[in-house]
Length: 132
Length: 142
Image (cartoon, chains in turn yellow, green):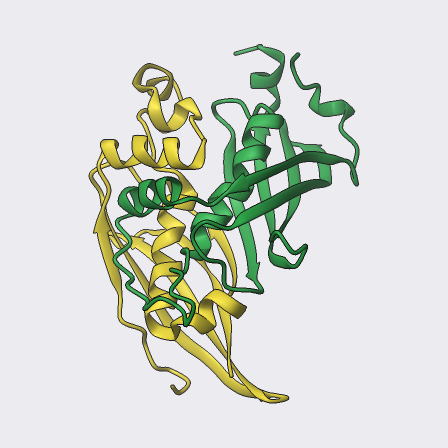
């Protein structure tokens, strides 16, 4: 893996049923995600997907690219930039920013983001993994 | 009893729970996020859990114990995974308040989390930044 390389992207579309399911799995039933009446009165005007649910696509991309090394040494620092609404398609992508040797391991730093179909960034950030 | 966010102090442990990352939870999680990663089982035959399922679990107690209100924005998140975790693991999740301030009508709270396995080994740490509208907390919608 070299600087400038891009990772295989992960693309998905989450339905409201998926959001409800995530709320159950994560134990996060914030009404902004699951209550249409509450969400209608919010700044978003409708329900939005959990940020962590969208961020999971970055982790999935990193796991596919780096396997167990991501599980053992992955780091991620992200900002949630824009809401993702049920039904929207999002794409996680990553570009290798640096590859450097640290002691007996190679650390790969990746600029990561999740974009919506209109190219708006929903999440931006950095991920790092040590390959031993 | 409602949480008075203005009385929470930095350094305070705001959540401490022990969870099992069981098949049901991981299955529900994988189905919701449509994760199709298919890592082979480890040498001991146990299946690795997606790291973000552990992260989701670590935030469960925070959301519940802090009674995070609707309208709260999750604006930033950091994670560091330090050990692979298998499905069925028992995890101890602890969250500490690292920042609690008000700016521009928004309460900004930073919560750090640590997750340890049954042997007491840290498997994940994290930092969550959330913003709560102050008018929401006081019940004043104006």
